[in-house]
Structure formats: C-alpha cells, structure tokens
Image 1 (cartoon, rainbow, N blue to C red):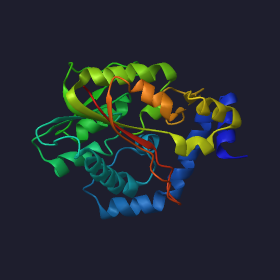
Image 2: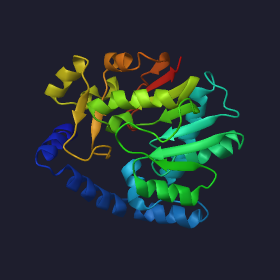
Image 3: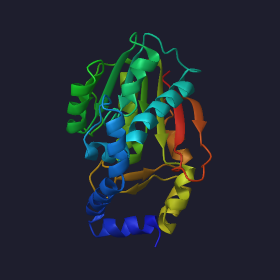
Image 4: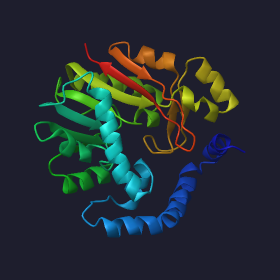
Length: 267
C-alpha cells in the first residue's frame, strides 16, 4: 500500500490526525539528538515550540533555520526580476512560525516593512514575542485579511493554497488581490504536475480533467489537509492577474517533490 492510498484509508476512518500525531511523536525521537546538538551549538537562535515547527514544516531545527534562510534567498532571487525590493511592504501569507520571514529584514534591510499572517494563533503569538521588527497578525480561514486595500507591494504564500478547500481558493486569490497594490507581485506555490504520481486512480482522473483534488476529512488548513492543483485550473483562477512566470521545477532524487511556482502581477 503506497502512502497516498494509506492516507485515503486513514481519512475514511477519521484517523488521519491521530496518525499524524503519532508521526510527530516518532519524529520527536528521531530528531532529538541532532536537535539537541543544534540548540547547544546555537543558543542564540530562537526556535518555536516543536509542534509549531512540525505542523508548518518538519521537526528538524537545522532545516527550519538554515533551510528557511535558503528559502528566503531563493524567494528573493525569483522576485528581483519583477519587483524592486527597497522601501516596500512585504506580507508572508501563511507565515507559520516565521521560517522564512524572520530572515528577510537581515537580507533586504530595514527600509522595508515586514508582515506575517497566519490562522494559527499560537504561531502568531510566538512570532510577535520573538521578532518585534515584524508585525504578525492572525487571520481567519474564510478569506479575509485585516489590512486596507492596496496595502502591499509583495505577498508570498509558500504551500498555503495546498491546505485550502475548493471554495477558499477563489476567495483567497481575490482577497490577496484586494490588499495588493496595483503592479504589486504575488508569489504562491501549488502541488502541480509533479504530484500526480501520488494520487489514486480516481484522483488522477479528476486531476487530468482539470479539477482540484482535495484530501480532506480533517481540519481545514492543517498539514493533513491537502489540495492538488492542475495547471489549467490555476490559470483560470489567476485570470484577473498577469501571470509573469509559471515554473514546474524538475524533481531531484532524495528531495521532497517541488511545488509549482506562480509569480503574478496585479494590473
């Protein structure tokens, strides 16, 4: 039984979050030694509570911190051709425990204004206590942000649409456009063609027809809630934006499957 079929089976039984909690406990043991070594070697690095880290990424302190730094640099390299990154307002939509946004002030400088938003109140509280130079705000799941219209020059959401229901895709894409300035840039990632091999036969049929594939029966927005995105569907959902780039990165053996990258501009 492959992991996709097992996931569907556990969802039908209502056990997917129980299984994920067991996985968290196993990871706690697996990474304990290396995590203790990292904390001892880097006492000045602020680290979120273990479950907040696991829920948003993986329970590996080094990959959370140094991987977050590399992701921040990767993000900037993607965006520089499309946007000046000096004196701008930047929003990390679905920031979790600040894996990426925590690094941007040191890379881009203090001339910018940095914001993070997330549905997890515990993450938002930890971030606000830990990174006073960044403003963190809790958002509800239902496609609303507590920011004025035309507020941000740049919004990015890394693996956020991947945890939203069908109806919330359109709501959030419209809401992000509302708070984005004209000529502002939005970058999001999705589980596109690279993930087709993880789908069941029935799911592949939906995907190949250009329909969103949802693995639910769990808490909306949680890591166990998963959405898969065929390209034609996303092109239609992004019809009110100008699509600057769409990339389907090639998988690299030994690494996690790469998500599609969409870079969009508000007219």
